Image 1 (cartoon, helix red, strand yellow):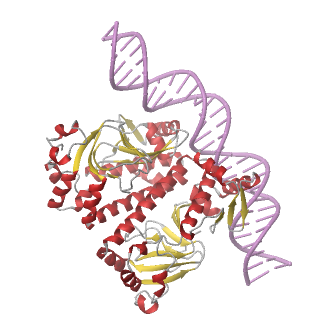
Image 2 (spheres, chains in turn blue, yellow, cyan, brown):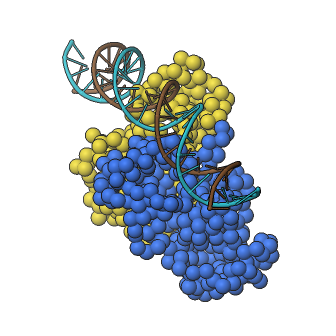
Image 3 (cartoon, rainbow over the protein chains, first blue to last red):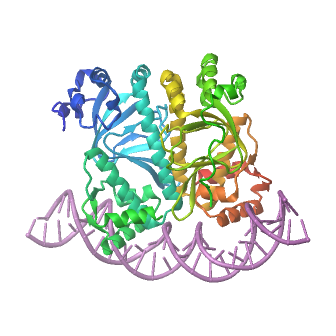
Amino acid sequence: MMPPSDALLLDAPPDLPAALLAPQAGCMNCDLRPVSICGALVDEELAELAQLSERRSFAAREVLTIQGDRSDVVFNVLAGTIRLYSLLPDGRRQIVGFLLPGDFLGLSMEERSPFCADAVVDSRACCFRRAGFQEFLDRKPHLLRRLHRAAVQEMTMAQHHLVLLGKARAEVRVLSFLLHMRRRWSAIGGRSSVTVPLPMSRQDIADYIGLTISTVSRTLTALERDRRILIVPDGVRLLDLPGIEASVAGG
Amino acid sequence: MMPPSDALLLDAPPDLPAALLAPQAGCMNCDLRPVSICGALVDEELAELAQLSERRSFAAREVLTIQGDRSDVVFNVLAGTIRLYSLLPDGRRQIVGFLLPGDFLGLSMEERSPFCADAVVDSRACCFRRAGFQEFLDRKPHLLRRLHRAAVQEMTMAQHHLVLLGKARAEVRVLSFLLHMRRRWSAIGGRSSVTVPLPMSRQDIADYIGLTISTVSRTLTALERDRRILIVPDGVRLLDLPGIEASVAGG
DNA sequence: CGTATCGTTGAAGTTAGTCAATTCGAGTGG
DNA sequence: CCACTCGAATTGACTAACTTCAACGATACG
């Protein structure tokens, strides 16, 4: 899963020419290739793109982008979980999404980041200088198509999340979130399990689904009491999947 | 309550060559060209695209797309206002966005519409068969770039709306909505006014910002009583723009 | 002029938020 | 190995905000 050359790269100074440090042979048989934007490229193109990339590790809580600040880098998440959020002037926070392995950070290709992003847990990503990536992108229409597809998918996900935040009760929000995470993990990992990993804290969940930590906690406890879920370390087990799906569908 | 599936999308025979019906000379000096995706095309390309298009009028409430149904048409809004929404099984409705002149409906280019769309007021749009548009798009990478930019913009808008629905109080929601509409109208019309046209009903506003019609009405009344806005037919006048902007910024 | 639709307003009811106390668990040091 | 500490999670009592339900008023339209 992890290319052997990785250990060298992790603590390498970030401003050294990436190509010198990282041949990225791993790109060719990367598990995530089919689910990430790299899937749009043939081997030669991927090799070329790999020259532009540099693998980096991020410790939990390490910041990738700051809302409104310049960001000259875009990322392809390899491992871990990144949260994307907006900070309000009163200190509250709205998480607009979690990025999982295979997800792309920087779809907008804007000079300034529209949101903050930081690592929920220790994570790794392929990093590209925006200018170089843009230049490569301009020569590869099929990559642009793939990026567009990703943007549309993000947009649709955001719009569905809108429906949730606009209309759903606390229990439905929590259950939707669990099903959503289950679906996303299974899209990466291949097979789906009733055990849903939740690397993020209760506060993160609350800030994502528009509730307070108290309400999230109470709701999870109630669901466990009713034997609909089982709370396990860093995750949840869905005991009554059909029932949960029915609750979510029913509004 | 809302979308009668009996309403046919296109009552013109769909297999007539559009060009015969609509020479579209108007495309060349269309006011919306700079703000819509057509802006990405040079005159010859636009002429070619115009051959694929057919202008259509939609009466208020006329349905453009139904959530989950096949849709072989994509639209470029010319005039009026279109609402995009999701219908919940219990009959409630969450509006995910309003499309104004210059906006594109069908960014996802998926076979099935992710949302319902219908006209808020009498509206007009350029319609393209999806397959034909897709084929044209495949030959014009700069149009794809423009479409990508539009998708990213929609995504960012949706994500900012998420923040609103997740965190904001009723008054802030209403004021944000007013500022948002003001900004969007001014992006089209050129100059911005303190009078914000609101072609949609109170119920529409409520379903967009995640409140009930009662709360929207009460909030607007309270804002007018405090002399911060003035309610006029089909719109609102912002009496204290700086104060309103401050309220919205402050959370 | 009657009817229908939309918008406004009032009173009562719910839901989730707030604030604060308590518990839990991982990590640390004696 | 146990006590201590710190942050995260849970839980309870109370409150605020919004919804619900219902009545009423305005406006448009045949």
